[in-house]
Length: 97
Image 1 (cartoon, rainbow, N blue to C red):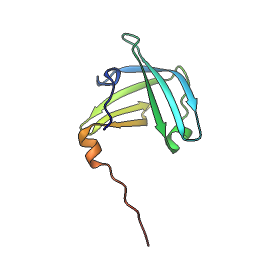
Image 2 (image 1 turned 90 degrees about the vertical axis):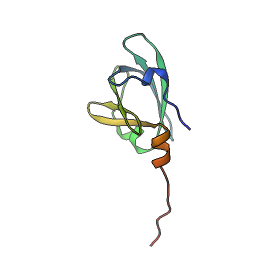
Image 3 (image 1 turned 45 degrees about the vertical axis):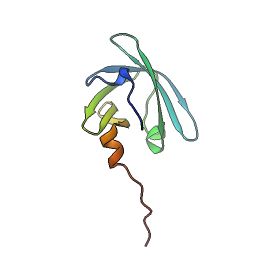
């Protein structure tokens, strides 16, 4: 189960991207909370990481929803961190013809 770090547990928190490391799998964002300088790293895997134009200095907004934490840049979601409810809703099923 994934748990959101304390730096991401406050709705409306403003974070700044301090560093971005791209890889073949996705990207790792190092985020810093503006209020106290707390830092957290978030690994984003998949197309979202490569298509979002996120660079150091970009402002990230934290939103809390019933299924977890949403990180967004300029209204575009860059990451979703599910809580226990969100984890129970995630599933993968093979689709065949």
